[in-house]
Length: 361
Image (cartoon, rainbow, N blue to C red):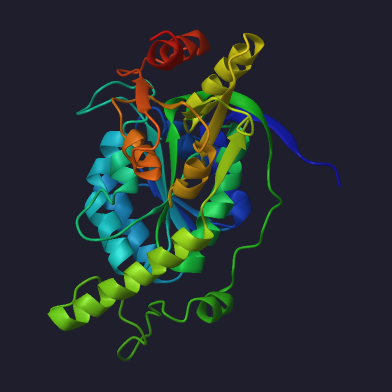
């Protein structure tokens, strides 16, 4: 059977992949630059083909709480938004994490702070990787750099969420959400039956009539000793995720004199800068973290052993650079280059920044 290849936006790929995964429900609210996720789902009308529920909620707060309700019953449910909208969801995301519920959240980042701009950014890194909401919790955070990864990470995000009973997030910048590329869509999966959900999710609320439900899902615990044990269990889960689920891409690192660390669309720009630099005899390598949490500390530490400097390139004022510095400690100098306000740098700017910081000093 030949692959089904389509030309589409990253946001559209998210919608198609959700249907193909066999997702049970999507609850969202439109906001630029991710509105095509909801618009595509509405146009495809999966409720007529797979039975998937698609609902435009009255707000981002409503949509994340709908996700909470669906996830509590073991359903594969998701939402998508952009930076200010995800800020409104933080309480609900914390509740999902505390209730150990699997769910998929998509954030197609725009410039901030505040309402900011509708243009692309990567300034939600802290919000996504450091918890964002209240309490000691983590999200599994996947950072796509292609439209193909936008499609692939829907299935991966759901699978990881159910494997570890924790929310996962696709953290995409507006460039990846809006650009068009060829994508191979995954095969269509059947949605799970109610019996399959009961077998796979014995923890789920069952909504029994005529008596107390088998399971009560809540993030509330008034006994401090029990709440501490709950948190200890969460931390054991996070340690297992850190051990097993780190993902990254390494390019040209074997002989590199300098290293660039970048994620999302900016990694693609940096790769072009690296190829141009190598034509000039400047040997630069690239580490692209794919999971922003768990972070590729060991991979960056290993790649940095023989380099003279690291340039962290981001569409923000400097956020991932903190994790890069943790990875290498003081063993190698680390500098930051970034643009803000929705301005995307070109490869020449990246190469010029590296030369300024390390070569032409």
